[in-house]
Amino acid sequence: MEPRALGSPCYGRAHRMRILELSVLLVSVVVALAAERVLHRRNLRRIRIRIHVNGTRGKSSVTRLLAAALREAGIVTCAKTTGTLARMILPDGREVPIFRPAGANVIEQRRIVDAAAAYGAEALVIECMALRPELQVLSELELVRATHGVITNARPDHLDVMGPGEEDVARALAGMTPIGAKLFTAEQRHLEVLRAAVSDRGSELVAVGEPEIAAVAPEELAGFSYREHPDNVALALSVLADLGVARDVALRGMWKAKPDPGALTVHRLDFFGRRIVFFNAFAANDPVSTAQLWNGACAAEPEIGARIAIFNCRADRPDRSLQLGADFVSWERADYVVLMGTGTHLFARAAIAAGFDSARIVFVEDLRVDEIFERIVALIGGSAVVMGMGNIGGQGLDLVRYFANRAVVAEAA
Image (tube, rainbow, N blue to C red):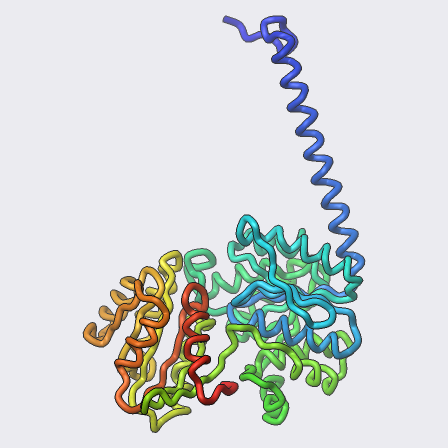
């Protein structure tokens, strides 16, 4: 049977009306999306400084440093972090949680821009929340359109999404390179990847290297109430210098910055005769950064008896667990490894295959936080260095609070 034209009587009046209604609806949606895009672009133009911060480690810290320094310089500034806890930082420094009724989605960046424009912000410092390479491109080219791009570093993490290798991670991060602007980075291993990206988009690469990092004096770092990494400070100072903010003003503002909840801190406990030094490094989750923190903690406390590594695993991040499990065996020796979270068997399997003694692995996956604390204390004779790593989510932050609430001394790491 020959197909009939749409206007043929066989379709019936009701059917034709339904198709017409759908066509009108489709046109309305397209017009609404176009209008929303125009409004978003208008809001972006109202914010003269837009800093888009990306990287494997240090994104939230650099975002907070930049925002605090800009506020100190008298520039009306909003900021948004997606680190341990997603927050919007208002021009007066107050923080409000990000409302996510349907979970995290890169489109929420549009709401942040709208809010910043409503506050009359002259500057917006916004942390890139995308992982997938195509979404990193979308975040920059459609949602932020930065005047200044920042990539802190490129390390082997989220390899299931951005991998398979470390250089692939650098390529994925480079997707948020702005057009016709400046890209600042403290990355040193994959500069050629970033140079190719800025060349493609008609931008300029500003690389912060060892001389700039070494120029951050110990007394400048001593001004922070928590441990801040000199490469983060040097990178932020480079961006701020380009914006005309004097170094002394920038540092004065940075010292006032509130640290991210995942910032490295130390809590010293005297718990019924046991001396415990707990390092909160849960926000560290790539092998390079995590190894540096663990080895540094062990070196800082040479007189402590036992060394206990806690890894908070995630079943939805299997590559991370396998990476850390295989890699940590080459770090400073751990007496025990406590595995919490989900999918802990993946970490254990990789660690045992790399030569770690299975008898020294303690599984606490199904325990409450107070029970996890008790299991850790039971492993300690006289004294111990205890470090939490891998992921701050789930029970990670709760365990930090449990140690912090029992500490006799809390200090910057």
